[in-house]
Image (cartoon, rainbow, N blue to C red; front, side, top):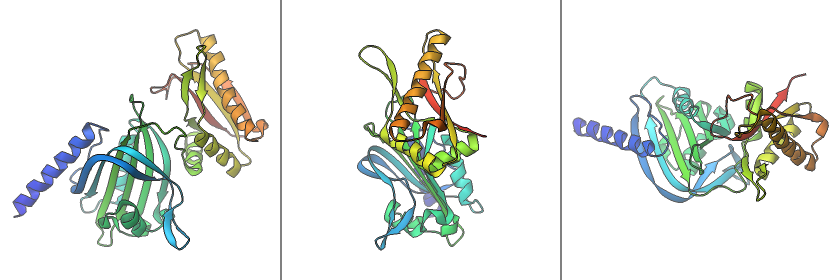
Length: 302
């Protein structure tokens, strides 16, 4: 009987790997036991973008996005002695091999109750564990495909000290026109840790062939919220451009991109004395990824 159970676990593990290999190639945690695994189309996936809080007498996430597309999900139990942080970091490290953006992250009791995540959100009772030993993150991963992936990770230690992790990967079937913004807290964390944050935008050409960045309101508002929470911060908007033209033209165009974002912030009543702009063309290729242009928000230390 144990032999058949072992063979069944191996088959499930292989099936799980093949689902993700066709979509977003993530390796499973070594020697983890697959508890549940599924894949298929969904037209109503709820991506949590905030913590569970008690609202009007019931536990709810304070921010979420409903999505549709191809969903692959699996629930794994880690080997004995491995922590929830071990499991979470294992998958997060893999996401860093791609062009990815943190949308939201919480840890321990800041996430709310584990019961809410297990039974209300993921609807998998085996994810119910200790509030102080839980971690959740939501991430956007962009590839050569125009439609991004959205990844939800949840890891928790149960009362019996076993650790369970949930991995959901959704390849959306349509682009979110308004954009899905990172939480202000995630942007602040990036600015504090790295000194910069790549503003999510879309570079496009108008009918006359002029290139510009298409600023989505959700991303703009998130940056405004950051500046509101950090009233003493000053930022630089640094434009980059990698078009096959002269460096002088690249610098001119990238300055325009930075000015576009500055003007959008100005229109929302952000004090312009807090913002400086630069256009450096292709002089900083690191971090380019698949982008032909980008604008970085850089924290200025004074």
